[in-house]
Image (cartoon, rainbow, N blue to C red; front, side, top):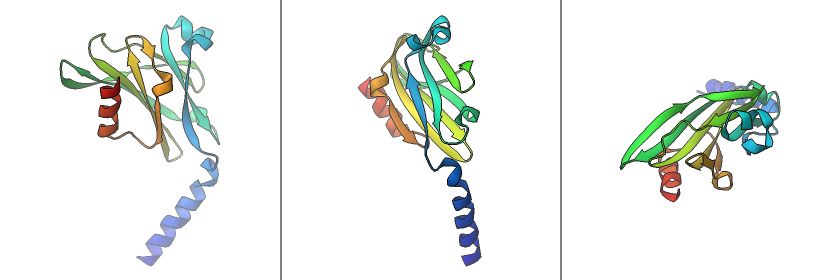
Length: 145
């Protein structure tokens, strides 16, 4: 058991230098990018931090409540340039919605939950965190939207 703990600690220490400066998602204004604006993006998302965050695996899901039922829809991200993605409206007008974006890079995971109304993102209300948001956090974001 002691040997296993030592191995785990050593493995953790080896990954720390790669992400010592952090790893996060930056939510941007689609109007600031000619390309994103041409795609009719609601917002942009950019993995940021140390290393090569442009190589992160980024996925998105629209999380919503429609007619009292909880629904999720995969959101296709549109590459604007390496590492910068445009998020376009891929959810219905009915209901309350938030877009959950998750990025994974070298064993680290970060996410942001962005409330949206129609084709407008409330970037100021976006909730950033390390790891994935819990269902309770998604429910709270939807209730506040």
